[in-house]
Length: 167
Image 1 (cartoon, rainbow, N blue to C red):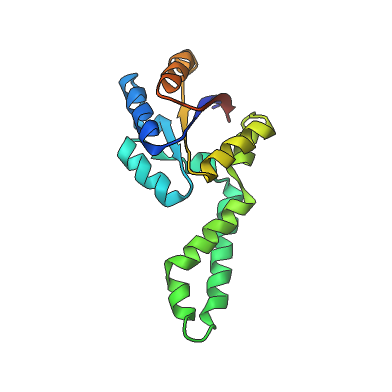
Image 2 (cartoon, helix red, strand yellow; image 1 turned 60 degrees about the vertical axis):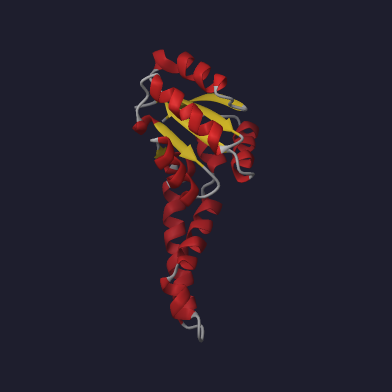
């Protein structure tokens, strides 16, 4: 069921963490706060610190995930025959990172946000901000809570603030 998604960009992880604390004080639960950072590892780490969830729902589309998985397997198969390093790459984190990179190429944050109704230029600006090290919080809010959530995020120092309808 569609609902409002409030997006807030923060220049630093510490201000995003303060914003998450303010959201919890409003009664917003962990499951309703998504964290998007430069990579999945950072998003997971920040989400754990903020008592939130990593924003993979905002960051990746299903086709991107499938492409990333397939690309990782293809790269691993190719690397397997490389003398000396093949088995290391195949079983190691490099294969996962290459697969994740391919997935990001196929389904970007901007395209996901655009599909939720954000204009292309705004979606691309948020994606550029995250790529430059900013942290994006996505708050899945009930319609009556949107104004309180927006005010709280603004007071916490959000540099960008948008509201879209999440499908």
